[in-house]
Every structure is written in structure tokens, then in C-alpha cells.
Image (cartoon, rainbow, N blue to C red; front, side, top):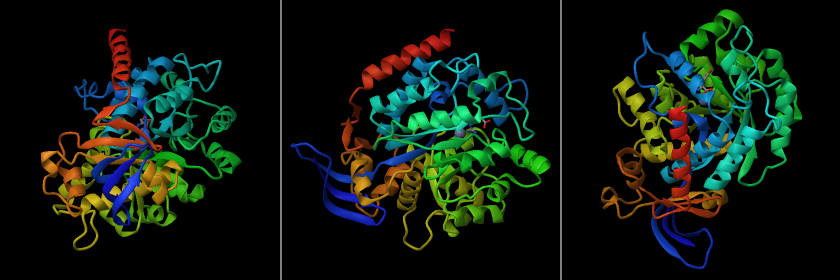
Amino acid sequence: MLHAEHLWTPLGWQRDVMLGQGAETTRARFVLPGMPDLHSHAFQRAMAGLAERRGPGDDSFWTWREAMYAFASRIGPDALRAIATQLYVEMLKAGYTRVCEFHYLHNAPDGKAYAEPTTMSQAIIEAAREAGIGLTLLPVLYMSGGFDGRPLNARQRRFGLTLDAFLQMVEALRAQESAQLRVGIALHSLRAVPEAALREVLASPLASACPIHIHIAEQIGEVQDCLALRNARPVRWLFDHAEVDARWCLVHATHLDDGEMRAIAHSGAVAGLCPTTEANLGDGLFPLAAYLGAGGVLGIGSDSHISVSPVEELRWLEYGQRLATRQRNVAARSAGESVGETLWGAAWRGGRQAAGVAASDDSLRGDCIVLDEAAPLLAARDERSVIDSFVFAGNVPLVRDVLAGGEWVVRDFRHRDEDAIAARFRGVVERLAAA
Ligand code: NGQ
Ligand code: ZN
């Protein structure tokens, strides 16, 4: 059991709360709800830092994507499992207690389906189970290589599924659902899912009551292509062709006009923001202040995993706005409101929604993190200041213990199996580097 002297909830601080199970009671000064990571491509963690060298011309999202495709083509199920397990341990230690895995690496490297089509999904499920992180698995539908419906290129064939194969995969995975495993669906992007397929998926009973995620309007190039071929901007087109509601998570949603921004905010859908990846890939800046002003729901994801840290995502979410507007405390809406608390609470609630799990008091108690009250940075911090110090000033790990799904997976900064998991990861990455 854990005795939390101060437990933060989106409704405010609670005093003297008992959490977790077990006979022995430990004490903690500051406890926060664990953050959901609403957007992950786990395999990309193993190439973090390997695409930061200039190529022959100007680099962009699209040149990064070529490097990513080349890397993806070498990942089989064992490598995926080892990489994802290590990543999920790192997530837990950083304060994420649940992950939405936007999973499109379905087929074998030669592009053919595995004899057991869910082989790669199974690797993700096992990784999450071994790490002890909650998983919302989002099998991805990926059918075409552009807005014009062109076929997949050689490197994209690994991602491709027919509509029937996709629905069968969702159904097979759904049979495994539990408290720690939810299965939603994802449409890779408007580029990758033709209109007719979009309509059919959304009409399927398999999509009726689960999270639905899609990459949208991340790059200006996509907005231009969509305008040219479909006569509408991507977010507008989506709202004109689908009932976008609270089941949906619009990942990135970077390039919005005012009407699109309002449409998302009023729909109750989650804007899935991934600030460190969006910065790394040169995507652009989400209109945060206007969106919060319109009552929009948001959550955060680590996406390419160039960084694995909820505080760094939130920090960059706020700092992007400060740099662009030359103002401070942009995410806080009223006098006296803390930016750190506002963002932690908003991203927790929106993240739970995007993950398809309840955001109740109860759910909070099974997924929470204990801050290191002995850290010099937290000296003389109290209920009013601790979350801002954690979010903005932590440069060393401040997450001491982590409870995920009601179990202690991190104690005293150590994950229960971190050495074996890291050794296996190292072996896989060394083999990939040597190949
Ligand atoms: C992905 N990642 O699917 O991994 C994408 C790149 C694409 C981001 N958008 C590929 N950050 O969008 O076509
Ligand atoms: Zn993504």
C-alpha cells in the first residue's frame, strides 16, 4: 500500500489517500496520475538520433520518412518485441502508465502477410505485458500511397492490408481485451485510406464504440495535396465525410484554419499532440491557445520517440507558444492558474479518452506516479508549486515509483525487469547496426 500525503486529481489535491495493494505501507509526499502516451510507433525508438545528419539536399519530414522506411524494413517480430519492451520500460520510468500503439508494421519485410497475421501485433501485446504498461492497441488500416489512391510502394507494402484482412485482425485482437489491453482502430491518414474504405470501416460494428485514431494535417504538403485532389483541407474533408466525435483522436492536427480548429474543439475529439516529434520533423505549431479557449480536448504522445518524457512534451507544447507569441503562461486560462497543472490534467483526461479507458477517480488510483520528494529541486515545494517544478525544471528523473494497472512496476527508480529487458534490446540494436 502507498500512503499518499498529497494526491493530485484534475479536481484538485486530495490529502492522505491509500493506493495500491500489499501489506506493507510506504509513504509518499506527492503523487500524480500516470500520463497516457496517446501516440506511439514503438519500432522508431531504435532509430532515435540516427536521422540528425544532413542529406544531400534540404531535409524535411519526407526525407526523414525515407530513412524511417529503410529502418522499418529490417524489423521482425523478435526485434519489435525487444524494442517495444525497452521503450515501454522507459515510458513507465518517465511517468507514462498507458500507451496507444498506432501499429502498422503488419506484414513480413517482403510485404507478404505472416502465416499468423497478428504476429507483429502479438509482439506489441507481449511487450506491454512484460513491461507492465497498459496498452491500447490500434491496428492501422493502410491501403494507398497518396491522396490520388496510388498503390503502395515497395517499402509501404509491409503496412498494407485489405479491408477484410484489417477487420479480421481487429476482431481477432479484440478477443484478447482485458483491463490492461484495449483494442481500438486507426486509419493511417487520409493519404493511406481511400474514401470508400473509410466509409466501410466506420460503418462496421467493430468501430462503433472504440477509439478511432488518424494522422491528419501534419505537413503543409498534405494540406495542399488534399486541397488539390479533394477540394478541401484535410480536417474539413474529414468532418464532411465522417461523424467525428469523442471516439476520435486526430493525431497532430497541426495545420488548421479557424473553422477546422473550432470543429475539432466542438466535436469532443482529442487533438493528439506530439510536440517533440513535431519539432524534430519540422511539422509546425498547433494553435494551442485558441483551441483551449474553444474548450478543445487534447492529449500528448511521444510518436517517433525522439524523446520519451511526458514533461518534455508538455514543456515544448507550452514553449512553442511562448516563442511564437512572445508571451508567458499561455496554456493557463485565468489568473492564478498553474500551467503545469493545467497541462498535466488536460493531457491526462484527453489521453484516457483517446485510449478508451475511464478517467475516473478509481482509474487514477491504479495508474499513478510518485515524485522523488528527496530531489533538491523539490525542496520547499508544496501543492501550489510542485507540478510546475516537475514539468518545467526537472532535468533528472523525478519519478521515483510507478503504479500501473494496480501493480508497482517501478520502485526506487528501477523497473522490476529493467536489466534483462535492456540487455535484450542492446543485442537487437547491435544486430541491426551490424547488418
Ligand atoms: C508514421 N509518422 O506513420 O510513422 C508517420 C510517418 C507518414 C509521423 N507522421 C509516415 N510522425 O506519415 O506517412
Ligand atoms: Zn504517428
